[in-house]
Image (cartoon, helix red, strand yellow):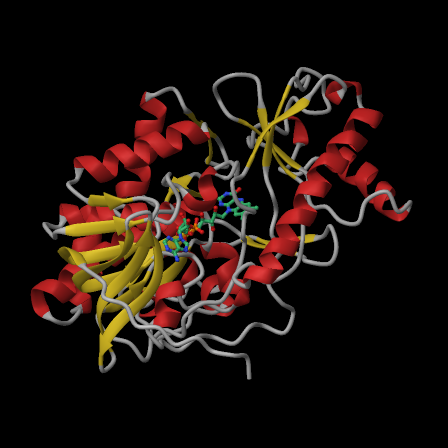
Length: 435
Ligand SMILES: Cc1cc2nc3c(=O)[nH]c(=O)nc-3n(C[C@H](O)[C@H](O)[C@H](O)COP(=O)(O)OP(=O)(O)OC[C@H]3O[C@@H](n4cnc5c(N)ncnc54)[C@H](O)[C@@H]3O)c2cc1C
């Protein structure tokens, strides 16, 4: 057994609230705004200096709003898109309904919505521990520049993506699926690319125009040949996307397998992804005139982590539930994005489309083995196939908004009444009327 250093420390309690949300990605932002709008004193803690999580790591577009032309996600997520649009920073790409956006505007709109709703925002604060009374979480410990601080809340929402708080609280976790997690990608921005020729003209939008689907098949075939020649180890896609404002494009092409919630693995993956980003750009410059004058303008502050471990909830939603649109007693979100699996060991991707949008049940947000605690976003209880569809931004924001309403229920009534929750979710339009 490794040597263990035992320490005790006094931690000042610096905030008292009804709902503490940990993690300021799409799910956490929606959860915090939702709880505050439900009248709860709310704290949102985020380890970085910006809100947005994976969404602002040059992942583009926002997916999951539309199923066969009908919008199935509303509420805070749709309001968020409308506010991006008002800044001229979002473009809805019909008929698929993907929303291309500018990542800097994502950060700004999220921050405005959080602050306007009265949430106490704590950036640069990393969750490091929690205190419990029995199974009940009573405090979270956050580490920042001013040292450790404790937050006292009546209900906690884990929106860390990796279920950090649920683990610390001793909640049950699902075992890792045999095939491992989907790969991580370091997404980046290229400026100076010629997007006027047929090579990229259509694929930076997600309209399906010109017969194009999302990934660029021509460049995929070229990079596959580079892999065969030993010039490159791995890649995915590639997907290019407009940032709506300016001429630069986001690029999603690097790919590394591993566990992004293990710090050693993460270091290895991020170093390799950065090497691959430069290698791939050099290969593109060599082959295509469109890339000859381009340069890397930015890359994600962290690798984009597609998948890590998830809680075992009161119910675990499965791929079969999703494909059959199982009508749970209290759905918290509808999923329109297809089952979209990226493979860790090759450039392959499989996509299974729905006949009708799927449902996420409220019980997938309630962890077994811990109380006063909910999960929101990509760490909810889902098998690998269900996960491959609910992880997109529109859906995790809807899950986040519903988690905020569930937390308000816990504060007001000490329990979640599915009938009352269903009504609140409908009133908010998280699931639009008639859906
Ligand atoms: C490469 C890639 C491509 C993608 N492509 C698309 C796409 O085209 N369309 C789409 O809609 N979605 C896409 N996604 C999925 C989507 O971006 C994510 O699934 C979504 O952002 C998950 O939201 P979340 O809030 O649950 O978690 P995250 O976005 O992971 O946010 C978690 C937040 O918690 C913070 N945090 C973590 N640990 C702690 C801690 N201990 N203390 C404090 N804060 C903490 C993080 O800094 C982060 O801000 C993609 C994802 C990746 C990685």
